[in-house]
Amino acid sequence: MAYVVTFMLIGQVWANHHLMFDHIRGADRVVLFLNTVLLMDIAFLPFATSVLAEAFRDGHGQRTAVVLHGTAFCWFPIAGEIAKVRRRRGRGNRT
Image (cartoon, one colour):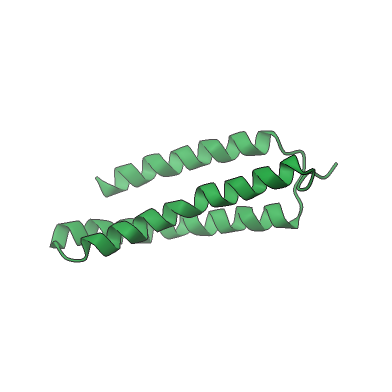
């Protein structure tokens, strides 16, 4: 079940990522860095999901596992908002 929920959330992140880049004509170093952080976070999710599933299966460390899994998803909106603010200020769009 943890895998399915995580997969669906990653799908939502992927869709939002494509929508965001539909509005960006080019990217500066900061936007590329934020995109790399997003990729790093997505690559971390299978580990966080396995920790979550194991904690619920074993009945130990559930709270810690939920915090780890939830924290992993907190970086998506943060990176997205920074990229949006840069775009609104005219940064992050190279012509």
